[in-house]
Length: 131
Image 1 (cartoon, rainbow, N blue to C red):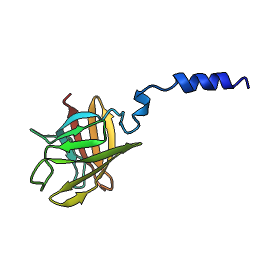
Image 2: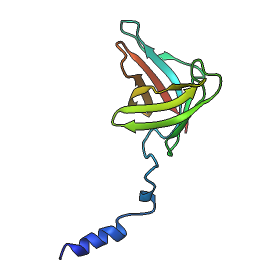
Image 3: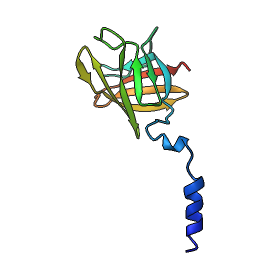
């Protein structure tokens, strides 16, 4: 019986309206990121190669994203994403083909690093935050 008062307190004051927006994603990936370097290895050690005017990802809190360009797509790409542990899951359509790449995700000095899951050699993409 003495536990009812603390439980009622938590029930009435422990939640806010913001907590009820369960479909919103709260993650440091939210925002715009532009590709600024790649590290692609054909089998040996490589360093970052700088990219000019790289593609831009716009990740939104509602779980959608836009990508300014994707190899082979005729227009801007949009789709949905999810982040779980250290993986980024994308789902989008490019020229009627459904794409579902999975990336390993990390952050280093306010840079977003994406690496394809399943790469045998180094295949990383570094993005800088735009906003």
